[in-house]
Length: 112
Length: 112
DNA sequence: ATCTTATGGTCCATATAAGATTCAAAGGAA
DNA sequence: TTCCTTTGAATCTTATATGGACCATAAGAT
Image (spheres, rainbow over the protein chains, first blue to last red):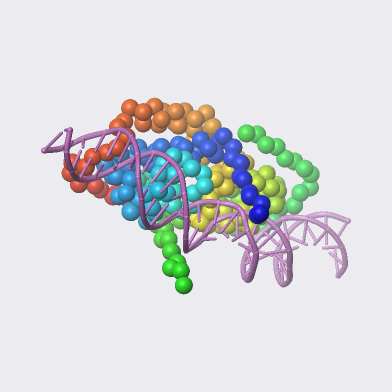
């Protein structure tokens, strides 16, 4: 039998997905859209929308983002212009950075 | 031959994923972590991390959120407390709402 | 220069997410 | 009450994302 890979998720990730799903559901209800309607507009199935609204982490991020956008949820609390600006800045900044990192010391800290 | 489903994504979704990926890469470089190290900590493969950092939308949202969390990116809000707060508020609000919506008129507007 | 490590990319096997279908139950309108 | 719609959930099949093994290139160290 093939070995089954079971992924584990941190509480933070679970909360983030649950929150996003709840926001989508809230926005959908406010706009008086049925699950089927929103799913159709997002180009996904109703079953997938259900999983997304429940905060299921095993969903394609493209489907989640697309659904959130159509429902009117703004990711990163930014409007489209601000998002594009952030993106451009991030790209410019990355262009100046070296492509690879080299460890000189094991300066590692996980603070979360 | 089986029919292939090709998903389309809005510019907003693409930008959001690209930004998130860029933020992850930036945070990884600041922490002087190699791609392999971050991938190991997130429990994913290096190849998947590469796609995430490139903003590929065909990735499991759980893997993306987990990676972002480990890299130190705070989703939606500044700190985890704010995230948990929002989540709780959303859930409380949802508990008061009816489970289903009924269309009385086609009051639908897509403003994005 | 050499050596070592990191990255970017491709290809393939397979674990798995998505779509489709079904059903039961609940909600709202008549 | 009787419809009709929506939702929730389970099952199955299929499309596909993931992991792993490659290899070439780039970058830092010596």
